[in-house]
Image 1 (cartoon, helix red, strand yellow):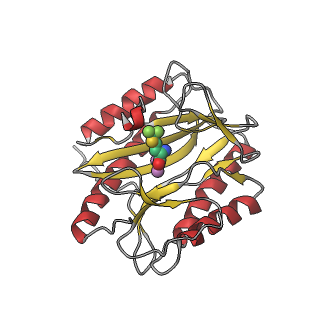
Image 2: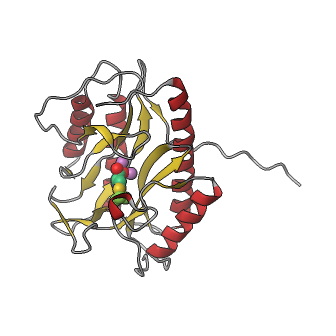
Length: 257
Ligand code: MF3
Ligand code: CO
Ligand code: CO
């Protein structure tokens, strides 16, 4: 069952989305050479607490971290630990928060310090694919219109979309119906309606689409060991262009002393 959000729910989703976006922005700025992934997770936990939110991922199916941190060939669901980030690494950060009973879910891949042109292209294509998908998230269209736009954009740029993990409805739970694949799966596809809230999240591999899960039971890596990128927004579907709920809000300028 797809849960449509009332005006009141939408207002709460806007707040959860804004906090998720703020935390993601803060965590992305914290990433630097020499920082461990556990440092990143601790920092994310502290920022969530500071904004009055809590992790929607910690404990979800027993997931052990506050945010998902996935480095280079890791696609999603990386586990924080003692690994030190190095200049040139690509770090995917996925932030899910609960705030007043609703979830905001957003992700971004950032380079550590800097990266080569090929890695930059992978990130750019993944982010632009997300916006191609969001552009299709309009009442009256179908989920597959989002999927097709993402897949076509990614493949036209020579990369591949991961099949095993998909976007999803989001609301009081991290994962609600419908599934939002990043490729056309040929199955019947729900019609989009005003009041749906979706997490659209292309996971894009530089090489082939294949992935496997490491023996930690969580970390998803590309089968060929080539890097992967991940961008995600929570959006509200309406009659016009979707409202992106996880855009980082302007932080007010502090007055000069
Ligand atoms: N990456 C997933 C998403 O954005 C959620 C992660 S669930 C967790 O939909 F348990 F792995 F954290
Ligand atoms: Co996410
Ligand atoms: Co998601």
